[in-house]
Length: 373
Image (cartoon, rainbow, N blue to C red):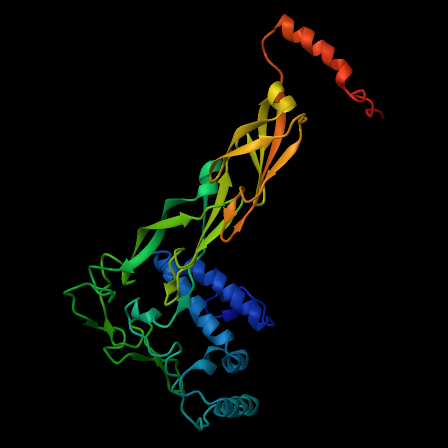
């Protein structure tokens, strides 16, 4: 069990921890235990109060020094460290001399450890701010849709003001009751013996009254909902591209801003096109006649079909470049490289076979002359 009276233990840091270490650990624990993240969980709410109190002290250099020297007493309102040191010196001397009847030379009024608070959960968190988490989503697109862009709808968590209590955190129609612990004073007296010690009432938080929490939001003043975010995927999205939609991520806690929505794209492969950045490569089949004699052929591009000239005696694997017919992203557009794939007829024909056999004499050099290890 965590010792709530030891702030270093509450945050899970060493007594020599740096300010950055304390801040990182606090943010981690606050996000995990905040009541807005755990509605209705009283254990989480109590844990969050402990974490907030610990951070309030350990993140403040002066408060931390007082806490390290005097413990919780050094943090009470009206605490005078010089008087405390004088009292300790007097008490040590009294113990040594055996004189147990000497009067204490001063009184203590410790005040409120956490400062003035109200008893409702929502008001008790005013001023607290923790940014919302960034949310991550993946959208799968086909090759053509990624080139041209599209619109998608994404459901994300959100928070809204509780309609039952209008954000007050109090049950409508309820009447605050006088706190039975402090009888409405907001303070209680602690300790025995000659020291006069008063502190804030832990039952009502110093308000002197007990407020009935809203039955809908459990006193948070906010309720968790969902929202639909319409997102435009711009033209030219690639595999692994990431789009950041600011302010559409997880809701902030307290006064914190919402996080961002990060959408990663996955693009399905195309049977004929491949992509290299903003450039496209198309493997285009051509006939024997088109490759030998030359021809004008139709080529599909992202901006529409264009006509391309195949030069005479084109070889299979030759690449032709169509400038500005690649992927457009923003103000930039790539090129389209057309790789010719010469296809032989897939039906047998004796006349064609005879004619082709006579073409062997038309090669300037043997076609496999340079193939060697």
